[in-house]
Image (cartoon, rainbow, N blue to C red; front, side, top):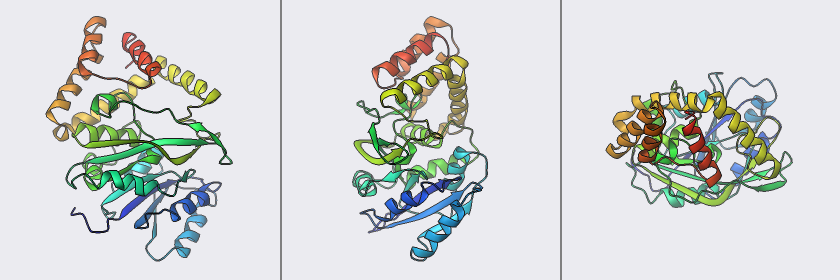
Length: 314
């Protein structure tokens, strides 16, 4: 896709029974300092007032500003992938959007300031830190920062940013569409990071928190502050011990093999080393992981990765 003089952002919002916070999120999108956007919403069969809220905003925003489609009703990952793969959605840039967050007014502008420096034919992805807030939008703290440069070796075991912060170009969404909406991956945002970094694209991590990431009873992923952090660490340990982390990696390795032709030669080598090491006995396994360059952040998470490697849980 050729880049227009005034590029448009297609905001991809997925909803499911989101009536409590949805209006606040939509209002925060409406106040973006970058005004050239359209929103596409995929509702996954909401039984509350979510559909009526969406209809209300579609009528009060100018014609064509908001479009509503029906999701596949197979969970949030399938919903985001299904929406992303709709060919009728065409823009220079795209942004994932969750139903219960609040965007800072300059979120889109900061992302485009990074992405517009990248040629249109190179996949590019922007993600940022988040400001964690409670159910009433009261501040809890900030998500853990990343300090190392993003890359494929990192993406193999960890996602650099929550999907609610991600903005990306058309070359990046083309990778998602090539892979298809039925791919069995752990998360849509992690999958995008794998594809963009694997294809040799550019990944930007912004330490500025452009999203107020709401934490509530039905949302545990991403909590990284005070007692919530301890809860997430315990849950992660359980997932590793039960084999959930390894099973998820297995699914994503299979998906990456289908997309192998899109990976850069250097990243194919990294992938091959990683896949071979996963199934070897202890010493060759650890050596293979070291040669592949995989890592996690922060240090405690990386030490956990080493422990998982020793236990053959990656």
